[in-house]
Image (cartoon, rainbow, N blue to C red; front, side):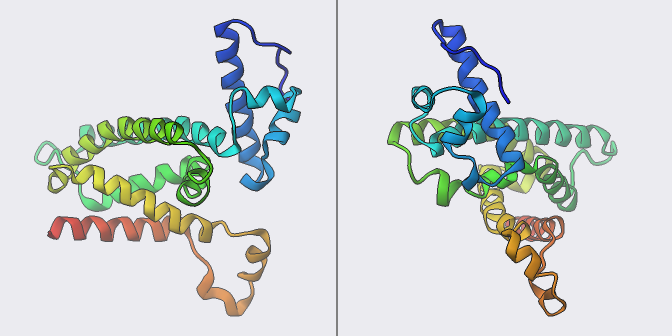
Length: 224
């Protein structure tokens, strides 16, 4: 259970508490479902009053948008670093990556940072549904800033994405994640159902399906 000072008075203390709330929410989310991690649960875990939590976040959706924002930043940094490494390791004759390499790498990073993938799948239907305009605008601007350098690097790896298609591709990665993740990690009762012998068609492997869809998308974008 998180130990934290009862009152945050100075700006540095407030920033510390703000981050502590985010870290606590993420730690709980890594072990539980989003539905289980309420503001009340976060406050209890931190041993602070629920009213104190509301000084920092008006809704659970607002809190988890900030959690996702920080996770997205880490994911973009990880993906960019690994793309740069692949470029450095590519042969002198060809400093470009192929579609399969890029699709495989993106899928691998999504699996490595599974809390990011789980939370990203909730973005359009849950996290963006109970927030005000200013919160939404700040979040979207933050997402665009993180995606910008990654999209430029993708365009360097795959030149057919130049002219802004790198950004469009990243948006479609989000759409693929939103559709696939809930089927790859369904509710506990469905997990029990799909192991039945006659349910084989309903079993979904995230790595295989995500890689297949990303490859297909990139090949389609290349053919335009």
